[in-house]
Image 1: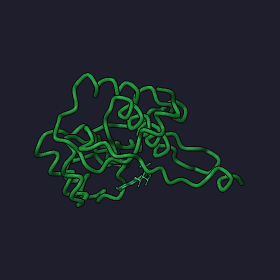
Image 2: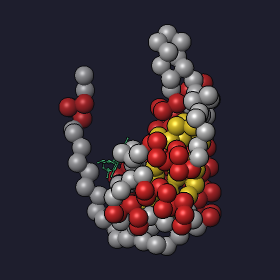
Image 3: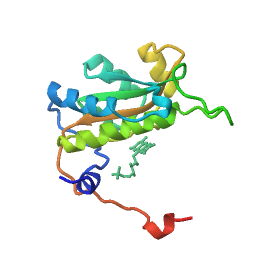
Image 4: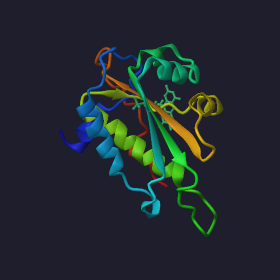
Length: 167
Ligand SMILES: Cc1cc2nc3c(=O)[nH]c(=O)nc-3n(C[C@H](O)[C@H](O)[C@H](O)COP(=O)(O)O)c2cc1C
């Protein structure tokens, strides 16, 4: 599968089969994530892998959509504010950018392995931090549900055409 095909194959999966994600697949995906680029190579991302029942219930309580309950596991991608690069000229922190890159590595690697994912940012950040007792410096940025799609959907890639994106 070439890269364009992989980009077409990844889509937001919002219905999962209960089949667990194999350890080898998870290891492979996390290795792809580990190799992501980051500003000044600071690698400020931190990962919370959640697959036990109690942990899954905590995640679900922070994002109250029915479909999310079907995911057999979640990767919560956090930014360590004490480890991120801050641009000197305007004080812009770059941790969230780094986290976004790592997260998309995760989603693409998962798609290559036949797994589905979905970016979830519209969750209750404070509730999640509290539920998992995350330290102050760890900012949860994205929740990624991951698992086998319940049924193979045909991705509807509604995108602006290239002309509209040019400035
Ligand atoms: C930064 C970001 C945040 C997102 N947050 C959510 C979310 O909270 N809930 C959700 O269902 N989808 C979320 N999405 C998924 C988008 O809706 C989806 O990527 C977009 O509609 C394109 O569809 P596709 O992923 O199937 O190609 C998010 C995507 C991104 C990149």
